[in-house]
Length: 286
Image (cartoon, one colour):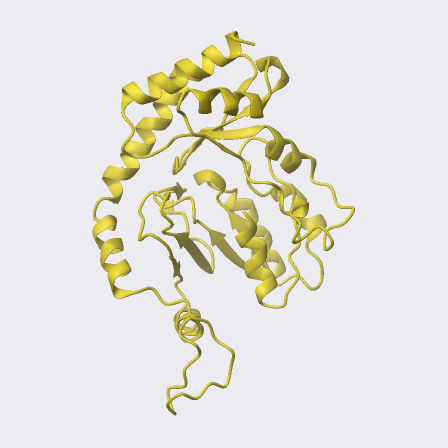
């Protein structure tokens, strides 16, 4: 998701891209040593679509190199790694409360950290960098990243329902997997311990008989909305010049062939059954 690279670019830093693991869609930890240079300050581990990144290996690399570890848990609220909540294992964790997330405030997000200094710094920057000593005095360039009281109240109420909403997402994932497991050419998203199951995705391979986009079109005609996987950052117009000539074959393949199905916590078993039946029908109608 382009927001990850944007957050680095906003700071005047240069993002460095690492290809992803084909099973989990997350940063390929084996490639980190090749991509981290002497100017590298931090690693951002994204828990893509709610899959836990390999934090054991990534955190170990960061400790060895003296790098900060930032967890992008925007899509992974409710997930865990070795018994700890995703977003709480790095120096800082980031969550999103956009409308399609497990819990929502409509927009906005949250930063969590065990560091008092980092928390104070985040509070300072999010509020225009107002000086504590002098009114309307700004020694740094800050941001307007404040969440309104109304949004916060909605978020607190949603947080009380997190366990129930997460359980529904987990049921959805099991229902999709039970109904679609074994469909030739449909490579279902990897299931791992601690997976937050924000969405349920699949990669459409040649054996399926029709392309990802043809499947999406067929499902749309049946009243079923789907989304393609994220387009790789190096292919985005905003970053094509920065990453000219670079190739990330796994990301490119997933971006061209991956999709995810409806995943709302309010989905019923009957609705998931209908979706899966239409996926099978799309293959037989080729």
